[in-house]
Image (cartoon, rainbow, N blue to C red; front, top):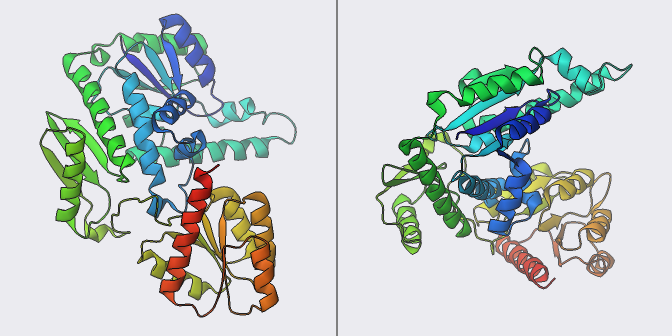
Length: 407
């Protein structure tokens, strides 16, 4: 039996078609939620963190944490485990994680024209068209970003990505299901020894990738023809040392196959490759209305392996706290709008686990006492020695992690 992999637009009847395919073919349905649940069990990571892989944009801290890449590794492992069977229907974003080398997969895209989707979203009701259209456009942007990140294709509905594209506005449910089940009989999607080996290679690659991820390495892995290929998507400063480190890590996993490396050229720009270290501050939010100062500070901290993002006012800082979950905050007191003292109060009320370090050039002894009373980890004054600041942020990060472990 072949696997059916469905990717769909919203408001085109995809859920009903998937349910009918399951009923008529006797297969089981596997969705993104199922994949996330299994990946959470395998990795111990929170489901919310894994689900963020499907978000429009990765976390602003991702350049340091490589959270998205490491979560994707666990999602691929959960999917690769499932690929040992062939009697299932996969529906969702995760259909694009299946490698093209697994031939016994019928890739189907379900889509409908704008008029059909707007009506299905309630846009045919008075005054609801614009709202329905905005909702559809937002969902389409989400799918486009996902397909671009996984396949490098700007058009999520491009025919080249699928074995068939099914327009559900011209085909009712009966005909859509009939067309898909007919496609299952095609010789090109029948299981063969090579396609089964490709599924086994996918599983082995996923196990290696998650093993490296558990050691802090965000490295793409592929297995084919009895060889392991590691793909490093960033420039490497000391390549020989990194390759030796990765080979040593593979040896601990009892990987005996030949290993090849591909590394992104330096000309591609971007940050250099670094291993993620959970003990190193990598989610520090810098909040200061002096833009040049805080941007320069972020760069200087990055040179000391401290990952940070910046906000230029209290309102933006609070939005980022709600959205990005920083672990440590470096906070100025005097800012227009919501000042630093008020930000400190609100952060400690809603996210007490975040350690807050005050860095101000206009503080007083009463300010110091009040900040410490409200729960600030430390109170520093500008100008501050960069090494003192770095050490303080590391100590704040250590306390945050100890507190989480003791919960």
